[in-house]
Amino acid sequence: MENKRPEWSSYISFIIAAVGSAVGLGNIWRFPYIMGKCGGALFLLIYLLLIALICVIPLSVELAVGKFYKGDPITIYNKINPKFKFLGYLCLITSILIPCFYFVVGGWILNYMWIFLQPSIPSDFAQYFGTLNSSPIVPIILTLVFLLISIVFPFIGLNKGIEKANNFMMPVFVIMLVTLAGYSLTLPGAKEGLEFMFKPDFSKFNSEMILLALGQALFTLSIGIGIMMTYGSYLKKDVNIIKSSYTLIFFDTLVAVLAGIMIFPIVFTNGIEPTAGATLVFISLPQIFVTLPFTKVLAFVFFTLLFFAAVTSGISLLEASLACYSEHFKMSRKKAAVFLFVLTSIIAIPASLSFGALSEFKILDKTFFDFLDYATSNVLMPICTIAICIVSGWVIPHIQKEAFGEGRYASVLSFLLKYVLPIILLLVLILGLK
Ligand code: PHE
Image (cartoon, rainbow, N blue to C red; front, side):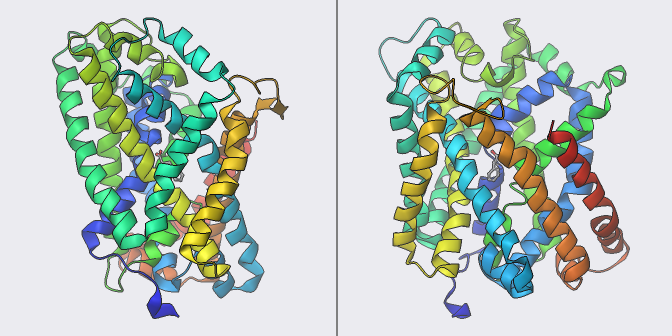
């Protein structure tokens, strides 16, 4: 059975797909606005330290556990100890729920790509975004189309679907990002934008920044829900995990920084607040694009790169749960994909209506969309990450050698894994519950 499992056709394909999972809306949409809210350069500095010193640890153990135990998250936890099987189910639930709101944003992106291909474009994007979301049907269609596009590749399979999609989309994404960042640097607000990003103002420090930076770093690396475990399980025996983790972190961070270089000069050139928040990408930026030369090309390229980032992450989210259905529940891959499509649609439809028809429907005082975001990012992801740290720190300590190698640095990482990470992550969880 085990040698029938698919494997990455090359190490590079694995890195591209893992970077594709990590690089997503988190880098282009979430990172700049959180950084904007947290005062720029100082946040970036804290973020860099945390991602390189702390987040590398759960990322490496997750990959190593996957590589060593070979399987989907439920099968792996079951192999470690049947008592831990429920942790695999938690991963599965999380990887089912995230796409249900993530893909709603994917649907908006599709719509924006479409409108910038039209002869006439809206003049007021705040109004446009409101009207788009108040329709009872359009957000549903957009979300489902995005889901359909993302599920096709896992449906086809690892080598012919997931690898091929990533191998095409990621290089095109990078070219587009570098081009737009270069364009932004020619704008009058470039100097101010770069200063905002790279000149830290230490007087702005507050402890909440650390938590936000940590939360963002965990989210962007797709840690804690079995994705990296699943992707790691397709690795060949001789792969060096810690080196792979740093490669992944390097590229993911590079993309986040380039996204900042692309966005902040535009923001400062036009005098809008970098703190504009979640609506930055769908209201403020398009509003600015309209005032710049080559509006349509610029905006279309921007939303296309956002689309590629979102699809490659979406593929990894779907693959994590698809692996559970096909391996643990023994469904065929194709059947599992159809089942997953139906299940995701059922939950994503109310989420897609959260900004219009169902805006009054609240759980814990949150719209269904916000509730899904909160339940996964603030609750389930930290819990699953604490679980993998404790299990690999205390229950299967041999995995640490697999994850970190040997030597003094490896011992430091092991120490942090066992004693420090569970406490820090518990803090993230508790403070995130408010
Ligand atoms: N890492 C992705 C991003 O930055 C989001 C993601 C989170 C994907 C969790 C999978 C799992 O957008």
